[in-house]
Image (cartoon, rainbow, N blue to C red):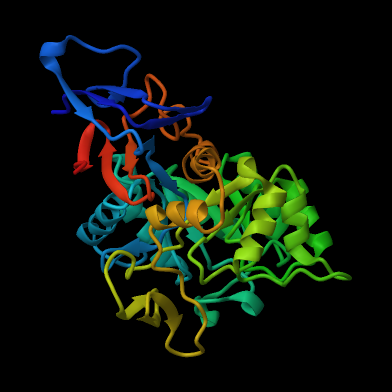
Length: 382
């Protein structure tokens, strides 16, 4: 059972700003507004140069710890979830990859059970409704147009746990599928797309609200043909996913996106695959073989980048120490914004009374020192 705790002395990041020498009070599984009696409370004294931030929320993640969300057993999925918790991600959405429709429906059933019991925050279907021109690490033979009937089949298989679909909205059925998803409160994300600027604007007007890993798997930004990147960056209705691992994005591209979208419209993601938190080697991403070398994942055939080996603690540290973002802005992008997208901000995404006691302790150099989920230490501060 979770016990009452007071974390004291560190810099605490709240929605209203950072509090030096602050306190976070935990009563059972939740953040509390006032401390319980001293006899039943554990006090955790933290150095003044440490940080206490909300637990990270990852809306795009295919696995980790050598285990796959896309095709692994229940135990495999739980292993992947635990791996990312060790790195500060206390809320995770499981992402699929392109496969046969019947397989994806079966997969949705497995993942939805874990979502129903609280291990996952839902399911993100990345593929098969994407462009063969921008397929990335997806099997071209299994791609299909986003027919609303097929989208509905996967929604139904997910039993209310479908949180997001990535679509190439310029394909036949794309706009109708966006409208279907919006009507059911499911995120329509534009990605793996060959859309023009005008086609992207049409999809946003139809209800799309997320850009799947902006820049990656879409046409580049052009001065005469601005393409989807310009449309996604300029529209206040769009939250842009960014993979800040130093491989997927040049620092200047990351800065450009963050400057235009701002802290309020950015969600830092991992797009992690099995090797995250595990190591180099050969892996399978759906039906395709991936080689991870020097922590970079690429398809064995063709060499396309195949997800990442990123964990969100590394993304946090890089965003502050390399890109020069403020801690408050990174917290919005790595916790608050994705929680809002998922409709979970009443439970996670900030350190406010009544919310789940999900938090991360970082040292002065932004190395992870502690992780708490629902009042229990996953990583005890040392």
